Length: 145
Image (cartoon, rainbow, N blue to C red; front, side, top):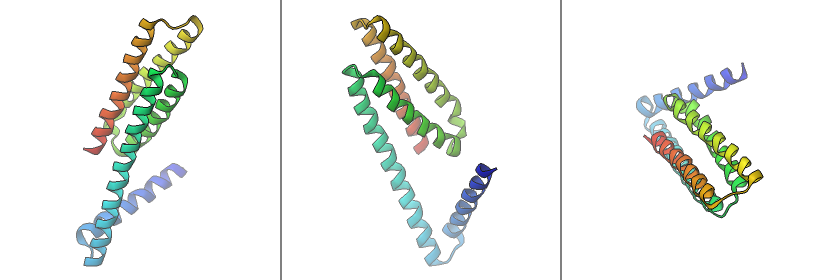
């Protein structure tokens, strides 16, 4: 119920913003353009920060700090999933696939921690981790389109 009310409120704000952007007075148009510009800048800043987070997590993963890296990737996927559900539902299947791959990787890491990691296992895990982080970057690019 609350979720529906929030969505309705967001829709109304966006509708008002769109109306003012195209049909408002000169001052309303200027204000709407400023809001759209600020929102665009915020989105770019968010994706830049997520990108740098992924790079730092890849470095941690390369150093063998698997749990922390997987936890941060989990939160990045969660944030992206929420954004996709609200803005680009057509990408839902792709984020679900990334989440599935992340869970598989986490399972392999926990098994490896019990049995010990060989260099071959580490390289395999690094490739899977890179596949997931690349997938996140691709989805972020699709969100910009």
